[in-house]
Image (cartoon, rainbow, N blue to C red; front, side):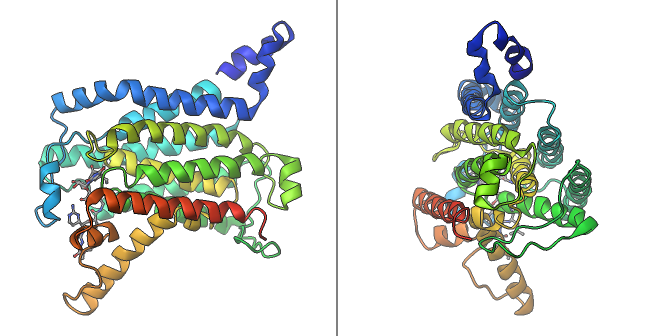
Length: 359
Ligand code: 57M
């Protein structure tokens, strides 16, 4: 909005020229989203506590989680509000990619909200059924895939990380591929969100990484120099990713161990889906499995555990899945698991960024 209001005045006030730059708007989008979370956080926590929006804790979980009962949840509402308002304030709103990302954030946020809300009124740790959740997610993700596919000049080639010459063209199949990436990312972040700050830390790291991917993909000279797919107008997603990263940091302030608030499904589903959408638009789709490698590891731990459990009628590979519970049950203190998982996420982000040069 500020871009549309203030940039045209640069002929009179030359200082307003700065609104033209994606870099400038990205930095301020991050700061705005951070400050919204930081200042509204205490109020939101009080409100949610007042409304008795508290977490129900599963009885079959690690003992250490019992004391978390009643922690206000659905903090994702604050994250979404911060990301959406900051993006509306700083992004170039004539960019259709920005609107697609906002649609995903709000749409998946709504699915998560329904899940959290049902959990609250049923007063137990189960909201929507697994099938309902996956159905709603798939429909929304297919719509999103189609919207991206229909954008002018959007190419349907897939980038294979670290391999320059191979870039298969999926044609209309890209819609399904994009939907898969979005749904997988949404669920993987959701599975990871089981310890204080465990999901929001790596989400912030991934958002910051994609902020750079978006900037380079949308810059014709840099994209050509690095020999990556140039995606006209994708640069504006750096502003959106900046807002995601800023809101993530602001939320982490309150979600850090011992958490004063959880994000709920409204947060985890929307953040994962938003990352998936950015990955698709910036043509770093498969790279998300590396940038968000931690989410992949967590999701795989569940797939293997459940598969092995069914196959052997009760056998287990891990003490408990997702993987963070395994380490907790091995006796690692919660903060140690969290910080070590963050370290892995940072290392994976660095390897991912190196792909811009190593191809
Ligand atoms: C949601 N939700 C947390 C909070 C958060 C198929 C199966 C593996 C699914 C999986 C599952 O349901 N995962 C998705 C995970 C819950 O957190 C709420 O949910 C939101 C995210 N969706 O924002 O509102 C609990 O996580 C803890 N938490 C924190 N700090 C945070 O910042 O400590 C969350 C955020 C909270 C709190 O305790 O209550 C969750 O874990 O429920 N299911 C599981 O993860 C379960 N695993 C399992 O059943 N494993 C079996 C299977 C695979 C064979 C096994 O290994 O034997 C575990 N979940 C829990 N306890 N709570 C089992 C033990």
